[in-house]
Image (cartoon, rainbow, N blue to C red):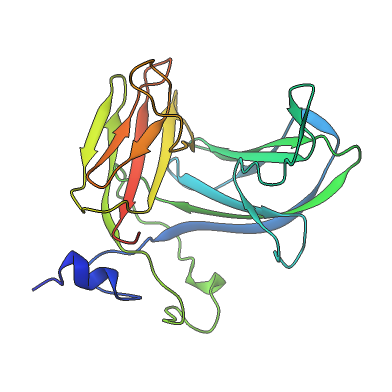
Length: 224
C-alpha cells in the first residue's frame, strides 16, 4: 500500500511516488559580451521539446548561483534595465536557447548547468543520463523531491489545478507558446485586473492566460 502523503513528505526518497527523471544534462561556460539581445543556441538531440531548468553562476565552483531569469544578480536598475546579468532558457523541438543580457560594462565568463525533463504528454525512450552522476545513482544524503501531479493545462482561460495538499508545495511551471517552452513564474497573479501569472495556494495552482493561446506544463511536488 502506498505511503500517505504526510509520511512520504518526511522521507528523503520513497518509491511510492515518482522522482524527477532527468532526460538531458549539460554543463558549460561562455563569455557573454555586453549585450541586451544576444543568445546562445545548443542542439539538445531529443525527439521532443523538453521542459528545461537552468542554474548559472559567475563562479566556476557555483559557490554563488542563480536560476533562469533570476534577478538576484541585478542589484539595481538604471534607465529601465538591470545593471547586472540576466539569462533565460527556452526550448523547442530542436534547440535550447539561452537569452543573454549583460549590462555590467564588460564581457563576463558565465557558467551554466542545464537539466531537462520529459513533458507529461510525451512518452518515449531517451538516452541514459546516469553516466553523468557521481558514484551514487541515489544518495540519501540529499532529498529527492516527490512528484505528486504533473500535466499540461490549456491556459487560454484561467485554469485551476486542485492539489488538495493543505499546504503550499513546491511547483515548477513552464509556458508553451507556438512550440517554444519557457519557465513561467508563480507571481503577479491578480484575477481582478487580469495580471498575467500564476499562484499556488494550500489547495490549488491557479494559472491566468497569456496574451496568446498557449499551454502550461506543471509539476507539483509533495515537498514544501
